[in-house]
Every structure is written in structure tokens, then in C-alpha cells.
Image: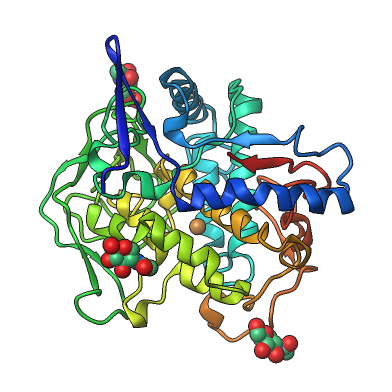
Amino acid sequence: MLWTVALFAGVAAAQTYLPDAVDILAKESLSKVKDWLAKNPQGSCTLETAVRRKEWSDLTVAQRKAYTDAVLCLQSKPAKTTSSAPGAKSRFDDYIVVHIQQTPRNHGSTYFLPWHRYYVWHYEQALREECGYTGYQPYWNWGRYAHDPINSPLFDGSEGSMGGNGAPANYQGIPIPGAPRPYNLIPSAGGGGCVTTGPFKNMTVNIGPLAPLSIPGIPRNPRADGLGYNPRCLRRDINKNSAAVTTANYTYDLITKNNNVYWFQTVMEGQFPQGKWGVHSGGHYTVGGDPAGDFYVSPGDPAFWLHHAQIDRVWWIWQIQDLQNRIHEVSMTRTMSNFPPSANGTLDDLSGLGVLAPDVKVRELMNTLGGLMGKFCYIYE
Ligand SMILES: *[C@@H]1O[C@H](CO)[C@@H](O)[C@H](O)[C@H]1NC(C)=O
Ligand SMILES: *[C@@H]1O[C@H](CO)[C@@H](O)[C@H](O)[C@H]1NC(C)=O
Ligand SMILES: *[C@@H]1O[C@H](CO)[C@@H](O)[C@H](O)[C@H]1NC(C)=O
Ligand SMILES: [Cu+2]
């Protein structure tokens, strides 16, 4: 399907994308948000005052560079988590530490969506407050690039990208435990080695790995918890085999065909025994490599944050189809895939970011327009 229009202006090539079915749904649903806000005013947060988070290629190259510069800045500031994580060297690493420590609690559980909302928002604040970034967290609309992610504005390795593909490496791909053949392996797309182009070509990954990765050349972490110092390059396998399950029709169906949050989250996170990877895994493994291919350490690839902004956006678009109900709808239990078995989570449960940010009630993380005691005030554009 040809849905991109390349516009050439002088030396800089800019690409614009036609809105996909999800973009159109999001735009059309804003009137519902307006109606809800009219009945449920949220103090100073209105549709007019709300921050607009934008898609990566809807930013100018200068805006994208401002974002990657801020990430590099965060990677240069001293860590606060060194007492529990001797391998953490930067403020950027602090976020990875918290994710590693809380992975089983915040995936396949009640907290998956609200916790990651808090997490991405807090990172956005750090970029702004600690690194002088004046924009907001961009998101990665997977479907825009799914047919050719390597050559996309996100991963083409140009200065306005999030960094390029990894060098060729000899590995099979990503095993998907529990899935039947042929869905039990996302075949390698030929990368997997060190990233050598774009803003993160010189980046050092300090902690992890923790999940088993079949990519050659990755040294083991000196500590069993993955938090020891283990400097190495950023590796990627930008993978269209994985991206194939993130085209706009998957996201559109996810939003429109799942009428309760249990199924919405289940389809999003993947149903491996049915051979369905889900857009959440699909996006993570479109980046792949190390640490993006590591369930625990994945926030250590800067692309994670654009992927999880899109996860948050898709939840938001789902919520605004029926805000009255979905603003307080949670499901699942307090443990990953209910293992070990636990009680259903509730809106009164606490969710926090370890040393980064205090625990708050899940209830505070449900509303992008007025949540977190009024500190959340954003929409996706
Ligand atoms: C790359 O990183 C090394 C080690 O952190 C540093 O000494 C060097 O100046 C960096 N080079 C560039 C071009 O940023
Ligand atoms: C999305 O479209 C692709 C290509 O046409 C198709 O193979 C896939 O099954 C579709 N997915 C859904 C969820 O309909
Ligand atoms: C837990 O939630 C499920 C559905 O999400 C529901 O069927 C079940 O009754 C709940 N259990 C309790 C103890 O409330
Ligand atoms: Cu996560």
C-alpha cells in the first residue's frame, strides 16, 4: 500500500504521511472528550491548555534533534540509583533500573497501562526539567513505518532519526515462548549488531542484560539482578517481520473490537498460545537487539519511550471512546499473568516509580486530562 508522499525541499527531504484509520478515529473522538470535559471539568486542564504529544515524523528535524539531544543530556547526568544498582551511570539509567526492579509487577497485571503512563510522563518531565527540553514526548505510530522500518524517519540513521539499524550479526531471531510454530520465532531481519549511525551511535548501554538474548557478543551482567556495570554498544535488529503485526489495521481492530479493558490489554500485550504477538511485543521487537529485545532492560534503548508513548496513546484513544466508564476501568490481578495467583487489582492500589517518584493510587493515573493531582494534562495529536 502506498500511503506516503515524499516532498523534497532543497537539500532536506521531508516525508508527510496521510492519516491512517487510527489517526482519523482519534481526531473524530475529540468531540467526545469535549463533551466529557463539559460535564466533568478538570480545573485548569482543558482541551485548549492540554499539551500535545506528536508523532515523530510530524516533528521538524530540528525538533527531533532537540529531543535526542535531551536524551543524550540525560545520559550524561549522574545517576541517583547507584546504591541499589552499581551499574547505573546516568539519570537515563535510573529509569532502566526502576523498570528492571518492577518488571513482574507492571506487565500482564492491573498496573501495565497506568504504570507505563506514569513512567513515560515522568521521563518527559526529566527531559524538560533536567535537560532544558522545551518539547513533549513524541510517539511512534507503528503503522506508518511497518512496511519498511529500516528506511523510516525513525530508524534510517540520519541526524533526525532515533538512530540506525545494527550491523549484521549471526542470530536466529527472537523466540516467542509458548507460541505454536511458526509464531514461536520472529525471524531475524539481518541486523543485531552495534548501531553505527545517528544520534545514539556512540551510546553505551551500562546495565543488563537480564533476559536470555541469543545475539552473539553480549557480555553477561556481573550480577544476577542485571544491575551490575556491563558497558557495551547499543545493538538493534530493525525488524519488519515483527513490525508486520503493528500495521494500522491491527491497532484499529484492537481499539474498536475490544469492549472491556481485560481484552483490550490482553490483545495488546499478545496472546502467545494463539500465535498472536500483539502490537506491544510487535513494537518492542521491531527494534530488537540489546537492550530493546530484553523484557526487563528495554527502556535502555531510547526508542522504547516513543513505543510506550504510542501504547499510552492507543489506550487513550480506547478510553475516549467511552470516557465515562473507561476512565475508571481496570482489570487483571496484581501479578504478571496472575502468577503467582493474586487478588484483582483496584483503583486504590498504589503504583510508583521506586526512587524516581512516589506511589500514587492507580486512580490518579487513569486520566490524561487532570490525573496525577492535576499534573497530567496532555492529549495525542
Ligand atoms: C564517544 O564516547 C566516548 C566514551 O564515552 C567519548 O570519549 C567520545 O568522546 C565520544 N565520541 C563522540 C563523537 O561523541
Ligand atoms: C491486517 O492486514 C494484513 C495485510 O492485509 C493482514 O494480513 C492481517 O491479517 C490484518 N490484520 C488484522 C488484525 O485484520
Ligand atoms: C476478578 O476479576 C474478574 C474479571 O476481571 C472477575 O470475573 C472476578 O469475579 C473478580 N474476582 C473478584 C474476587 O472480585
Ligand atoms: Cu515495560
